Amino acid sequence: MERLWAPWRMEYIDGIGKEAEKECIFCAKPAQDRDDENFILHRGKSVFLLLNTFPYTNGHLLAAPYRHTADLADLSEEEARELLAAAALGVKALQEAMRPDGFNLGMNLGRSAGAGIADHLHLHIVPRWSGDTNFMAACGEIKVIPESLSATLQKLRQALAGLEGKDA
Image (tube, rainbow, N blue to C red; front, side, top):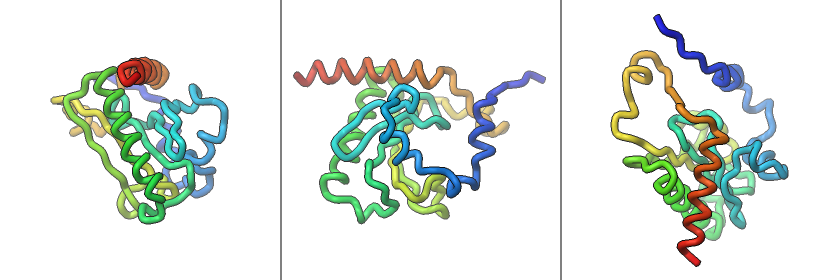
């Protein structure tokens, strides 16, 4: 039997159920001046994009408002528009950098809906490739992420820079 080692996953497993004891990552990370370490890809006026450190697939992004809220209806019109615009920007960057076949976009609002961080709403942007669900995920409940988060962040930053050049 072959073994697949993913020791970084233990941080996630150990943290399940302990989210309430920790500070909110969607408040703490953008407050720091450490975008590379925190995998922040883009900062807007009221919303930012970052890589999910426990991704479903390579390039899994999260868009979140800076303001701490769990209630979608609590977003201002500007925040709601910028959240969707950030998701579109993330999709464009992922298309440019990674060429996925499709995307899943979604929110889990509330713990019972599957939100791992229920107190600060965020939108998942998950790139998908034909055949990316295979025996590893289906039988072994294991997902193989073939690239480091730092390498993915750099690819996406290059793609964003190219997209900004096209808009100029």
